[in-house]
Length: 313
Length: 306
Image (cartoon, rainbow over all chains, first blue to last red; front, top):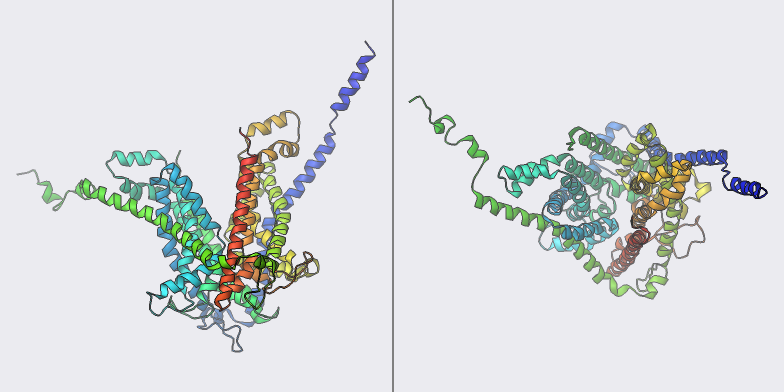
């Protein structure tokens, strides 16, 4: 009887003998490795900024900033080089403007329909359908804009050329509808029901409640979704490259070929521009301009949401 | 007559009348119009989607055959295929998954389980939401400078590896956010039970939290991968070639990918190449569809009933 006890004890002790020091060391190691992984996203940002800044500084040593901002021509690939960024900027602004005119009303109305009118079953089917739209690669939208939408538009828009900002902007707008719709819908959906009930109690109809109570209450989220959509439209590349053409031209005529900032970067990347040449540096300068614009928009959106967010409890 | 006539005091209308218009019938009519308009706006997007899909299918379906999938690109449209692009895309998926999954999931675990509510979490969080707003072509410029130029001896210049790494950086924020959301949905009681038994935080995460969160993480990461497959601009920027008539031997070879090949075919003037582009798009969309169904399947399969 007594001889059993020690062996039983040793068995127990062999079962429960955790190496705490080892566990702690492993935990430390895991923490360091995963911490480094998390820090990689910060390094990515630093990498982007450094990449753009280095080449930008080299560029502005050759081309004065003043010339960059005031030239009315953009010809970095010709022997007579001119660098007027507003030529590319005007095309980017134009396609973005058209896209927003499409995506803003359609996206917002879709958001209103999904959260206020649609039954839960309809909602369950329509939302994933809109998400499919968001998952379609932009090169596919580019194909559609260039080879299908432009010929259709040409039948009733006189003077519309094969490459144009109009169909690029329209399809760009369609491609960002899901973004506006789903973010606005989240904002509208989170407005508490008591606000709507209060409005109904005062005798307002459903539409009046939506336009006078729900939309203002969800405004910060809706505006944030708009800003994100603008920033997406500015940075979008394949639709405008394929459908709007490669013709740098100052002005806001949507019927003729234009070149946006992103499609200039594509044009140079596809060509055989030697690394280190001025044209090569130019794509980084255009990238910097693009980065700064989207950064300012993002920061504004953060500030706006924090400043104007309505809190309900 | 000391009592003033309210009509004269407020002009010809009472202020309340301006705000409250009791014309109920008219207001209901306007309501109906508004509701109809909202419905129409929702459907416009979906109808354009349907138009796009039908249009591409009509254009490209007759070009789809075994020959198209197994031959190299060619100057003769009838011989052209997208084998090199297909293989290139599969290579890219592999490399993106190899780098983005462990790094993104590790970073998500670190932020959600180890440094919750700290200075570091805030920094990385702000940084990630900023990165989400950076246009993808900027990532291409980063890839060009960092992987193609700076690390040329390691990556082999304009190679599959450079392309894969660039796309991995692009989808990393999506993977991190998906991981964090999945981890957040695991109940805290599970963690506390683990700690009560004397497990370290890593042991709790590895043995209990991660298996619970896995379906959510997998779904999110596969969606991130399908985003990477469709990306064109960053690959063009780092210099993916468009005409490749050989299969890559390894990650250091030059490459092309499905969206690049499609772009190349669209950019040509001949109608035959446009049909090839449409056929290529169908292959691309089928691939995306397959990946999304895998994501949904995994979610349904692994999600345990709580």
